[in-house]
Image (cartoon, rainbow over all chains, first blue to last red; front, side, top):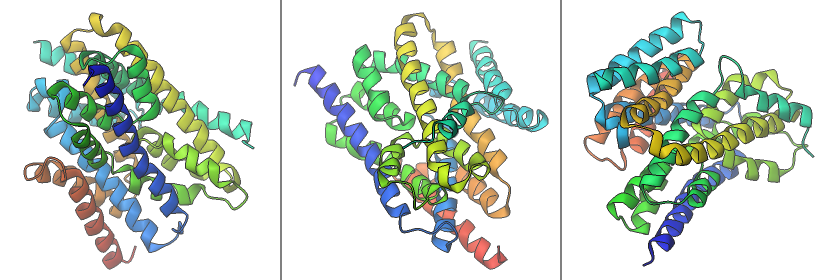
Length: 108
Length: 234
C-alpha cells in the first residue's frame, strides 16, 4: 500500500481509538451524579490510571526518553518535585528546570 | 450560546505560574520532530494533533509506523493507552453539568479532554458558577488543544535543528509537569493513595503485560483506594 495512505489510515485509527473513550465517557457521565459513590470510584480510577501511565513513562519510557539512564530520569524527577514543593507549587520553574537538567546530565 | 467572558477566563488558564502551555509546548515540539522522523508530512502531523490530541497515543502511532505495525494493531494499542480518557471524562463532566446547557457542548468539548486540561479543570472548577462551568472548560480545552497543534507544527519545522540531547530534555518536561500537578492534587488520603499506588503498579504490571498494564494498574489502584476510603469512612 502507498505509504501516504498507510499514514492517513493510521491517523484515522488513532483519532477514532482516542475519541471513543472520550465520547463514551461523556455519555456515561450523564448518568453519574457528582455526589455518588460511583463518581468517587471513577475519580480515584482516573487519578491512579494517570499515575500508572506516568510511572510507566518514567521507569519504562517509549521513545527518546529511553536513551537517558533510569537513575538520571529519577534524579531529575525527584529534584523537580522538590523544587515544586519549595517554590509553593509553581509549575513553570520545575518544568523548565527538568528539561535543562536532563539535557545537561545526558550530555555529560 | 457560549458565555464569552467565562470562555476567556478558561483560556487565560494558559498563563501564570500554573500554566500548562510550557510543558504542552515542549512535548508537542518533541512530538512534531518525531512525526517527521516517522515519515509524516507537515499537514499529516498537524492533522494528528488536531484529530487525536493525546500525546501517548500519538507516540504509539509514530513508533508503530516506524516498525511497520498493522492499522488494527495501531488501533488496539492506542485504544488501550488512551483508555484513561474514559474514567477521566466520567470524573470531570458531572462537575460541569447544568440542565440549562445543551448536550452538544459536552459531546463536542470531550475532544479537549487531556491530562493537562483535566488537571487544570479539576483544580479550578469550583471558582466558576455551575451554570457556566462547561464554557470555562471549553476555554481551557480550546487553549490547550490549539497550543498542541501549533507546537506540533513548530516541532516539525525545527526537527532538523533539534539535537538528540535537546529532544530528550523536552521529553521529560511532560511527566515532570503532570507529576507535580498530581502531587498538588493530593489533598486527601484517598487521592494520595490512588496516585502513589498507581505510580508503583503501572511499572510493575508493565513487566507482565505492556499493553494492559496501565488499564489494570489504574483499576486495581483506584479500587483499592476507594475501598480504603469506604473503610476509613471518608
